[in-house]
Image (cartoon, rainbow, N blue to C red; front, side, top):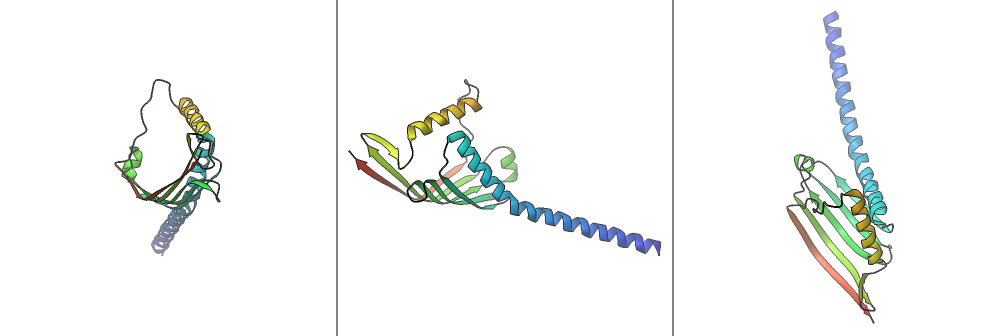
Length: 167
């Protein structure tokens, strides 16, 4: 009788542990995309100074991420619109800081030429580049000018450049 009770309790605790683990995995899968989206948003606002920016992180798992649509600039007059971005990686590759591929679909870049200067609609490129340089110099040593690790493949599909010339 005591042996049966001991086996029943062991099975009950095992099933309870499995249910808790599965629940934690589902909770992580539900909360992780929102957490990563807010982290990307705060990094862009803090380091680059881009505040008018919308991004939707649709899926994030161990084999890749699916983002989109992305709007840089105001929602009505964006400087850049990307319909979807797929990032392919492996868990081991992420640990080694290696990405297999980045596939970008539906890119629309809105440029303008005013007074002989190339710019993006609604963005001040000179200020953007100075903020990028300041963030880069703050995060890295001054003698280290190496590029961040690049993915093995970058693919851009359906890209459009719309340029207005005002002289």
